[in-house]
Length: 415
Image (cartoon, rainbow, N blue to C red):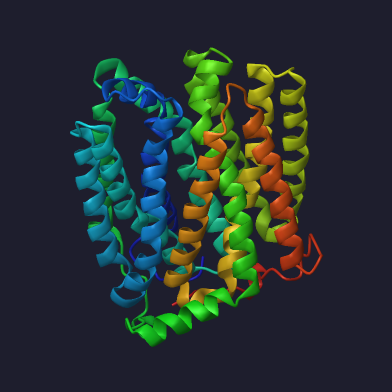
């Protein structure tokens, strides 16, 4: 293992910390899915689709704030900005727990998302500070394995909490987790941004940096591709509770099948971590994209024909999420690769674009819910085909190229 920019924190602890940072966001989205019905009932929300705003408000705050965190962490460093952001996450998690109206919950959820956005930007930035190329993709995949264990367990955790306490204690738990991550960072995380790479906050510098980012072909193409795929995933998250409750009439199976579906993302990320240095990011992600499209088309055909069952839904969604697990980390790493010298701002722009546009795409799919899962399956098909088109344009019509990835031998620590 080469010397990196996280002295005092071993490789396993570093990966675990990155995963914990990323998990704050996953917990904030998935742990309350089983509680949406109870939250709506408690606060007088009668429209089932309207409850999706609890997820979307958080995601919009999370996405927009990332645009600003990049500039801050490139100027003041990763650690101090992260500590302030995680402190806000704890505060607003507790504020949601004590909210007495649906409108106030939405405000607090948006503020919770704004605070939590620091976790996404810092996680990506500290990995890019320390690693590059396929090794960066491997680190992100290993972090994703831990991180993606959260969606597997989070709905069940939320369900267990509601067996012994009101739904508000889910948000108390989010605050407690955020506080634990904050303490971990304060005690163990070194500053990974080298002093020479600190960027002053000046309008000319910001404009120049954004100009570099948005004229980098790989960044624009693969960030847009990642956004489209993420949007389809958010459509699933928005619609899943309603589909299990109203389409299949099996609400008790929701957490178990959701865990199985999410578990396939974790399995794919583990496989990616083992194969990416040998096969390359493009070979894996492009193959997975074609598989995603094929499975989505089969799923949509079954749904439209009226042959959908809870088991066909679980199997096909699991297969698509396996493909997603091979796509997400690799697309993100390819987009970041040319821009290591402005990793903080690049991560913030990537997070802003993928989260805000992805949340809006997911919200559009979720609001299309009509008592069947047809809108969801068609959303996956559309997202897959558009993603393929974007990748083809970005790669000048070529797929599966292995020579354009950095190999492990070409990687040097980023200081």
